[in-house]
Image 1 (tube, rainbow, N blue to C red):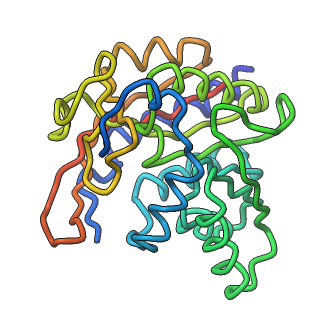
Image 2: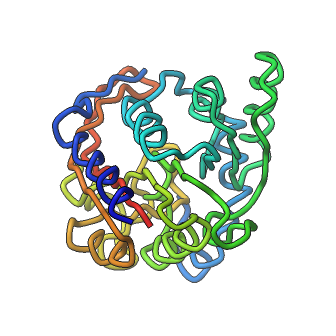
Length: 253
């Protein structure tokens, strides 16, 4: 166990080395928000917007390094979207499980993998709050630019599922939007720190914003946890620049 803990100490280095600056290119809510059709919402977004993000996040490059340092080779890209990070991880030699609730996103990912003749990616549609994988079955999980969608209880369910399917000493790299983000407070608050009609293009989707203390509580079951505040810079479809204030978590089960 000590050897694993020693390697786990490597997760401290993103606090220094993770790149802080990452460049990129509703209806009234009510009871129906609790029954949101996630697959339909994301299929519509991917159909209307297509693939709008192409560059690999430096967070993901750090994740690949952390996975390698901790001997993680079977990796789930949870909420893979249109697959830019699934493709990157496969090209790095990992066995990748690209999963998303949107068939539209998965089809885009699959098409890209086929064009690149990548045979080390499997595809699975599912809700991230109910992951159809066995207990203790994965070495690592990547989940970026995904977790802020929904309400706090959904995030809690997601963390519980991540913990369940990770092998002992497995690693998760995941990010969350901070309560210090510029979009916090926009729209209508439907529960503490959760807003609807909050982000343009995702008006029907609740967005929850997280505090450091909230994340510490969510990940209290993990053996080792590093939480690093970072800034993502991104340019929207109109060319306007924005900063996303977030936390990156690297946790070892």
